Image (cartoon, rainbow, N blue to C red):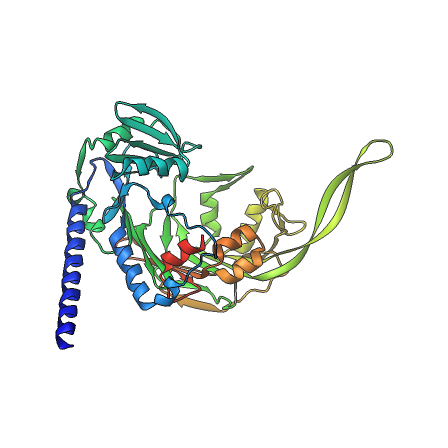
Length: 448
């Protein structure tokens, strides 16, 4: 028996050493990955770290992962997962100089070209638009996702602006004007441990999928805002569906004007009346009666306006803007956003609900409740920004099945913002899921 245990232990140790070596080698290969020299920003998805996290979670919760969700008699289709791609330890996406903001490129090796073409046709439903000299082009129906590939590799682009990306994709496919990822200016940040790491010359962040939560962090330069180092905000209601407060001023600019619809606001005037204190609360749902205008034809075939009253459930929302509330109210009224006769927000500016306006010397309040009472007690904090969303209550109060389907695995969202010493801002957040024991990524993918 002892001999058997020794042999078993030796085999386990050898397997662990083997897998550790494989992972280390795959990690080394990632450092040799070529990326474009003109990359201005990079997103790194650490595939192996994600796998390890989920495997360890499986070991701790075997009952959850092993139970079958497949109905009796249902056919299991495995073919759709045969992508034909060779997945490395980490996948890079990058932004390129001179290309539209928000456009990302990437390159992956292909291990089975037949499986890959079947995948892009039958699963991704892409159209192959060109084949010449061993290189093929495929794109989505909208044109915002495009591939350039041969039998060895594929270059891809995801974009919000449709352009001719074929020359760039061809260069990425053929690895022209590239350098090793380890030699990139952004490698110091990207070398950090984490499931998803992203960075450019000024900003960086990360996303990690933990047991029961998604944790994220983002550090960026405070350009147009002046966050408060010491915040003072209204006491929030602990049972609110959504709570938010912000202590930050606008940085003076060159007479900027903010425009939306037919309204415009001057930054100088906003700075004059606003002291950098803003808070928002959505407590529950209330019933609001609105006038609904329809048109009918009378006996003389004349179009006649008909006004009827309609009751509907809406969010009980309150927004407080601090400092010189009466002055800000009068300024917004001059711009046409507020009706002083009814003390309501102009329907053309916000058509969803009737919003009432109240003001005093220190505060301007917008609320879906007439004569809203808000907390006057103050709380200090080292954070300049805070957001808390009870996603369970939000899903219930939205009463929208389409949105609720995305919230069914989620519990709560919390975000905090802090001013750093080097004039940068750090945003930290956590999305909690209903099952606190199971890996968050697995839960999210399973719930889709």
